[in-house]
Structures are given as C-alpha cells and as structure tokens.
Length: 303
Image (tube, rainbow, N blue to C red; front, side, top):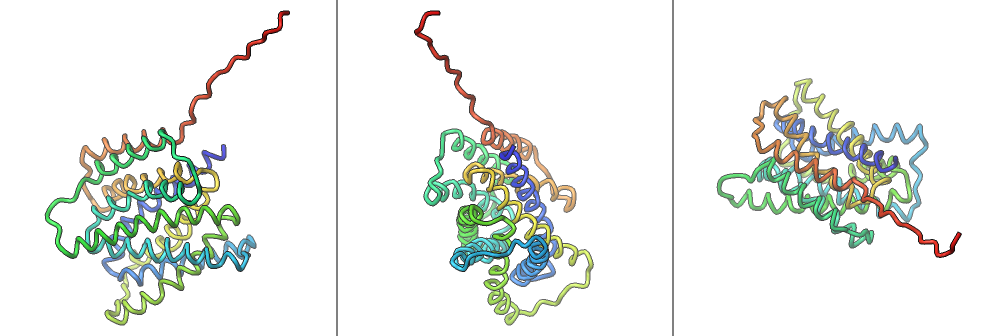
C-alpha cells in the first residue's frame, strides 16, 4: 500500500509539472524568468509557511540548515533557473528532451550517494522510458547556433542539478517530514534567487502585466506547481526508492504535450501515442513486483 501511495504522489507531481510547461510558456511572455522564479518561491513560501505553522512542522536541527540550503541552491535556484534560461536560449523541445535525462542521473546519484542497487528490471525500464520520451518529443530540427549550444549545456546542468536535488532531498526526508524539508528549502530558494532577480531587473525592468489570466498563472506556478508539486515529489520518495521513483518524472512531458494540445492548440503526432505506450510500459515494469519463487520443503522423516 505504501508503494502505491508513493506512486500516486510522484505521478501527481510530474503531472503538475507537465502543466507547468504550458503555463510558464504563456506567463514568460509577460514576466522575465528570474522575476517569475522569485514570485513562484515567495508564493510557495507563503503557502507552505501557513500550513507548516498550523501543523507545527517547521522545527529542524541547526546542523541540517546547511544541507537543506544546499538542496535549495541545487534544486530550486539552480535547476529551475537553468531550465528557464536554457529553454529560452535553446527552445522548449530541446529543453524537454535534455531535462528528461534526469531519471537516469537520479539512478546514478542514488547508487553513489544512497548506495541503492540498480537491477536489470530498472535499467530496462529506464531505457524504455527514455526512448519513449525521445519518440514523444522528437529531436529538434535545424542547425544549432552558438546561443542554442550554450542553452543545451545549461539544460544539461538543469538535468544534473535536478537529479542531485532529488537524491539530497531523500536524505533529509528520512529525518524530517516532506512538509518541513520543502518549506525550509523554499526559504533558501527565495534567498538564493533574489540576487539574480535584482541583477536581471537592474538591466531591464519588467513592466508588470495587467492581464488577470497572467496573474492566475503566476499563482498557479507559486502555489500548485512549486509548493504543491515539490511537496508531493519529496513525499513520494518517503515510500519508494529513488531509482524506481525517478521514472515517474517521465510523465511530465506526456502531460505537457496533452495540455499543450488542448490549451495551446499544439499538434499531437502519431509518435506521441507510440512514445506514451513505451513510457507506460516502463513505469509498469518499474512498479511491478517480481514474482516470488515457490519453494517446497522436503520432509525426510517418514510418517
């Protein structure tokens, strides 16, 4: 039962982040990346702070402040910041494709840091899911200019930092509740993102939009996408080992494509369905428990 709780939490988190790509695509046309990121964290902190206050889930040991600050630097300011900048330079398709490499890197970091074993079933699942994502998204066409090249490198950084964030969070959620870890990480996320926001705005001040739909998008990104999804992602790994749970990240591009079709009128090609089947099979293999071998005990004593 605990395993399926974890699967549900991770599926919800990945699905929300799939919707986030669509919402971000619209909101970033009106609000600059670092300012939007700081808004996200401030709204998330407000949401999580209120919940933590009433549930009295904010106390941590002073010695764990640095590890949680590192989580925020790597996974909040680092990974999401890299994702925004890299996607802007390289494009959404390449952004989705490169960052979908995170599960493979999560398995690697889980092996190195958490000493989790990687069996053949997990490796097959990972390969199938990766192929499925490539089929769904497709390889970007056209030549790569210098800006796009650097964008690709930044997106690789986003994938690496997200994988490291997931594993480091797992360490802390073994000590504290997911709510506590997510709340404190958001505190440091606000702090670390602020200097980049100030530098960005000193170069070009963003005129805040008057469109109410844009602000609804900002609220969604801050409360549901950041506070909610980050909590669900950390919560899921309380029940599932890191290398297995990481495969649920592949649901993100699937959901993003579906919502892009309905909300942004983006096309869905036949390859989407082929890739979707591969991803679903991969996730099924990862959560399917191996059959227990039936053993028979031979009784040498005669009746």
